[in-house]
Each structure stands twice: as structure tokens, then as C-alpha cells.
Image 1 (cartoon, one colour):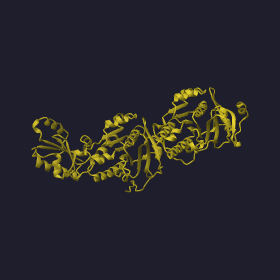
Image 2 (cartoon, helix red, strand yellow):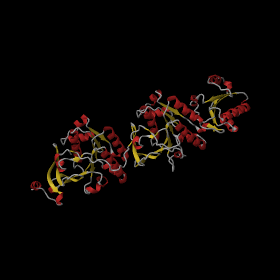
Image 3 (cartoon, one colour):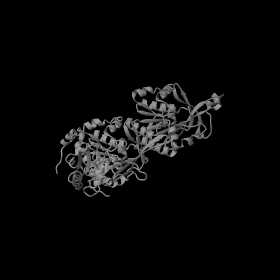
Length: 113
Length: 495
């Protein structure tokens, strides 16, 4: 399981300044160790992104057990929490992401009509 | 749920001092060490302040760094709020004695999509505790948590898990919660917090605000179940730890002068008992404050510290008035032997006055206390409240062996005994002053209605107040005869 580092964050910011990237999703999933909910969330998220976003996404997984200081920035208290960092506005989903519909609605993944 | 320590047996609880004035006395040493205590109450009752003081004192006085997980206010707001109390949170945070973690939960921004737990909260707390090696934790307030987390069942079970985690890590914690309708807290938190629950109450009656604290539960400690008044002033919270005590204070045998030699004579030549309570009643202008001033003057001359609480006249008024009767109180003020404390009786409730009086006495440790007058304090609230508050005050003064004097205004036409009924049984000595106009010549009279433990004179004497001070004149009436007997010189003057 690949775990991204903070470097992705700065490159994501550069990406945001380009106008045509409004449909590129940067999603950060906060977990706390390899718990069943966390493992399920990662799997569920990958599946949803593959279905709906066709490669126009990047998933960052942050394990708070390794980096507890990162919890404060995004005000994380529930685990797992998925934060849609890009495109704005920021949206948060909590849970193992088993409720696919809720994830789609919550992240506003419907393509713009 | 029954909970045992690692040995599986219930040992008596060790305590962590809060550093809040009066609270450590009321709880017999502070909060249970390494356990979670609940502080609940209605809005504005002072629970966040109490929790904050617990952390600040912990950091500053007891060398225990603390964490505040705040679900309601940002660090900036919190810092600004307590700055006026002299708490410099920024400084403490810099020195790693304090860590404030503002946890913001906006429910509308969060969608729930599957199972979750609150590990994020745990991780933040654990990280904070590790960062400054904290020993004290505050969670303020759970109400905000309940508002933010959609599923109360998950929250409840996570809170229980959190409290267990706190105890496992031997952290002394305070959790604040809002008062509920029929339960102590809105969400019935008191069920999970088994060891200590403190309830704060703040109410406004007739425009006067009253604050009370009650130890609802304290496992392993026989705590008083009384409500203790407390006040919040520029130094923070002060709880008045006095209760209706058992009557075990020592009766002292040494005496103190009344300040009027002839009155000393009437009291076995020695004056009041030290540590006793003296009531001086009289209609307007009969010389009550002058009596108090004479007493205080004599005490200061002996070098003892006096505290004068005035509820009607300003200190400078009193100084001026007493100068006109030959009493220079100002020099005692300058020498630091006489302290005035002036307050309007309606400025706060009776509990507030009691708390302020208690706090000042604890700070200055005087030998003599004057409360001039207690009239408005008696009138301001219902008689039961008053009596119980005064009982506590007088008991406290006796335990501290402070000689106290209370003046009370009575109204012309009212029999003395009835008006001061709420108070007189608490008093060891009762001196009555009044006006009379025999044969058209107005004069003031004084007699000692009672004085426990001594063979006091039952005579009525004329009280002469002039620029030389207070003196007692001729014998007017001797109550032992049960009849009005005019002394020879009074009869001569009348002719």
C-alpha cells in the first residue's frame, strides 16, 4: 500500500493554478493503522475513483499513527475521514466508505452537466 | 459500570489539587487523581473557567502540564477570555506547560458513509499529551461533541473508551457538560463518570446573580452535600468553603476592650470575649458606627489587624465622621492595621457578599472584623437564606477566632428583639442603642441586652458622643430592678 508524503501537497497547489484542471480530484484519506475500517475505506475509495473519475484523481493516504500532528490541520476526529482537497470547496466524508452513494454525493463526484 | 484498578480492588482515591481557592477545601484535597471528573452546569455558570483554572494552576503551581481539548472556542478566543484574569496562556503554551487544541466539528460539512470511530480524537489527544508530557486534561465541552457527531451511540461508546484511555494513562481530567432538564447533563454523561461530579449553578433572582457549587458525587470521600457559594472576580473563581459546622469552636477566655472604658466597666471591667460575636442595634443616628469605630480604634492601638466591611458609607465618609468624634482612624489605615472594604449591598447576592468577605478574611487574616451594617443584607433576600448564610459566616469567624461586630438598623417603634430575630441568636453580645427624649431633652441611651458568659451590667447609660469621643454618662435605668428608676443627677438636671 503506497503512502504519499507531504510533497504531493505542494505540487497539487501548482496544478490548481492551471485553469483546465477543475475536474482533477485530490483526495486525502486519513486512517489510523491497518484497521478493518481503514483497509475497507482504501479499497472502497479506489473502486469509486476508478469508476467515476477515470484516472483524473490522486489519492493520498495519511496514517495518523505515523503522523499524528497532521490530524489538527484538517480537523480530523473520525477515522477514516476522506477529505476532498481539490477541486474546492473542501468536503469531508467519514466512515469506511461502504455507502457508495453517500460518497459520490458527498464528494460531489457527478460530472458537471 | 464497575471499574477496578489494576489490582482489582478499590483503593481510596488520591487527590489532585485544583488550586482554585476554596475548592480544594470543599473536596478535601482536590479532584480524584488520574480519574475523570465531570463539571456540569447551565450556560454561563463558570465551568469552562473552572476547567481552565485547573490547568493553569496545574502548570504554574504544581508542575503538571495540561491539555485543553476545546470544542467550542479557538485558542485565540480562549486566550483573550482569560487574559483579564492574569492567565497568560500564550506564555504557558510557549513554555510547553499548556497545549490548547481547538477541535472544530461542523456537522453540516461532513457526510457519513459507513462505519467509523473517533480514533482521530484519540490520536490528537495522545499526541498532545506526549508533546508536553501532560498530566492534566480538559475536554470542554462534550455538548459541542454531541452536536458535531451525527451518531450519538458511536459518540457515547467512544467517550467511554476515551475516559478509560485517560485513566489508563493516569491523567487527571475534567470534562464539562451542560446541565440537563432532569439529568445532571443533557446527555446523561454522569453515568459514565463514576468518581466525581461537580455541579455549578448560576441564577439571577430579582436582578441579583447568585453562583453556587455543589459536589454531587465524590466516590470515596465523605463530601458535604451543601451548596457552596462562589464568586468569579478578577482573580478567577473563589469558593466559600464554609458549611454549617458542628459547634466545635473553642470558647476563648481572654477579653478585648470595647474602646469605651465605661462600657468595659459594664462588662466585668474587661470588655468583649475575644473571638465572640457582637451585635449593635439601634435606630438611625444612635451611634452604631461610632461604637464600631471605637472598637476598631482600640484594637488597632493594640496592634491587631482589623477589617471593616462597610455597606452604606464610603470609607472616606467614615473617616471624616469619626474624626469629628475624636477618633483618628486614618493613621491606622496608613499603618496598614485597618482595611476598609466598601460595597453596595445590592451589588451582588448574599452569597456573593459572603464569598467576598470570606476571601478577604482568608487573605488578610484579621483579628477583628466589622460588618456595618448587615441591615440590607438581611432585607435583600428571604429570611431562611439569610440566616443560613449568616450562621456560616459567624461560625467561620469563630473558628478563626476573629472577634466580630455587626451593626443593624432598627426602626423606631419596632421592638428591638423582633427586628433582629434572624440574627440575634448567633450573637454572643447584644448592645442596644436608642434615642429618647425624657422631659424634652433628647439623648442617646445604651444598654447591654445580653452578653453570654459574663456578669454584665443591666444598667441603661447615657451614650455621650462628642468631639472627645464616646463616653457613657449617668446611670439612667437599672433593669435589675425591673422598674424605671431615674438616677439622682438626671432628676437634678430635669429640674
